[in-house]
Length: 296
Image (cartoon, rainbow, N blue to C red; front, side, top):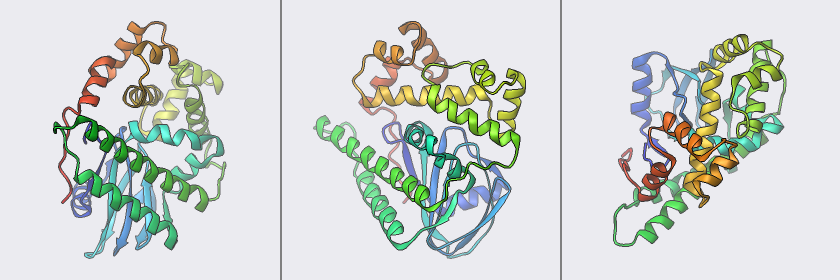
């Protein structure tokens, strides 16, 4: 996935073949995305629930989701987009208080009406066209920067549109199946609210009156990832967005995330990203290591 563009279009045929060859896969912690079925049918098992998708159905997958393809028709066609969770997660923060995030997670497949489908297909087509015309290292860096920002804005509009569709199509329900589901839901809600100030597992465990060990085992059981992984992912994802999309100094960002010092923030960031905040920002703005391969 491009560092410059935090999403990519995938070939439906290749994706289906890959998942079928593995039987069952766990989506990586740093990936999410959607599939819009435009023709044919596909039977998908998602977290032990089976869905029959046909023309006009959309499936949005979040991190830590088990997906298995049971069957697909030879004429299957659609739009498949994989996106870096660093890009999407800050957008989903606005959904948590209303419970839509959890409704989406519990009900990932819905049928679109004609207006919804047309809107998503139009935004996707426009995004694909602009992505295909990306250039790096040309004679006019200013134009390239504006073009990148246009693409990012289009991608944000697309994912907001998808989240709006889910929010308006699915009744918001706070009902959960088990006590463990309830713990996981409350943890994510608290995490979205407190990740800039609280990075210790103990804080979230104490909120739920659980021991850190038992709390961690529940989060691992319900999501496939530890509580610490979720916390780190939220902190790093949001810090990356601040570095990419704002002109705040690294010191200002470290203070916003309540790190004791800029140096401590730098060490924390480098531990999980592999480079310092300054180097990361420089790489992003220079458009280094950009993969412009398309799905064509």
